[in-house]
Image 1 (cartoon, rainbow, N blue to C red):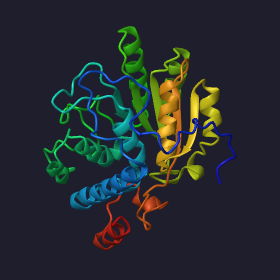
Image 2 (image 1 turned 120 degrees about the vertical axis):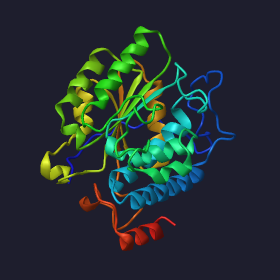
Image 3 (image 1 turned 120 degrees about the horizontal axis):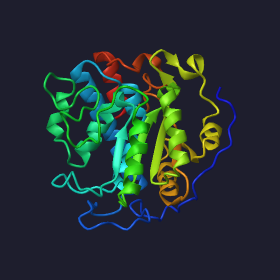
Length: 306
């Protein structure tokens, strides 16, 4: 069991509040949906995204289903309601918000999200991990220029994000930077060096999201290097902390809103998630950290996600 922890939660937003209203002034040309999505709509989309991820990994015969499933709600809410970006016709808009997937093995989830918003063709999703494909096993900017950087070597994304956030301040640019890291990845010392750097420079235009699914390649994090109490650790490093259920869409939305409006400190969302979320056989199962399900396992997972 994780150590007990105090929780700092975002202010409650009523269910009548549109999920697109993040209190930030949209820039001209900002991509907007036609109408604010509801919690129910986002939940349906999250389930569909997991089906797409599963289909990709089964077709490739390899990949990381568990950690891709655990981060779906986090990416969906971020891209749908907070990340300022334009249509695919203007992917290099200089005032766009930046997103870095530091836990690069979760690439299938990112690729499906990019397809949801038109940056990757849905037909291309079937090319995951194929020789010459743009959709490599880990995000590679050489193949997919929409990415801010290539990732996969764990521990490096938060440093890149802190540098990006500092550059925005120096250049007097309005964009924010978001970095999604894993809990197993948080055993890397470079994560904490970046955390100190960001707090020292008071980079309140930076938000880190920690996918705390409690499992890494070799097993449960508590048995390898216990990371708790994560909330207290990030708070002691000088960050504004939100500790949430990473699958509760309302909590995810509120946490992003709180970090976007907070001033003076970088923000971090400690997202408590379930590895393999949505597929009962894969949930909390270390075997599916980096293994594609066999045909029988896949059939059962598709049935769970129907």
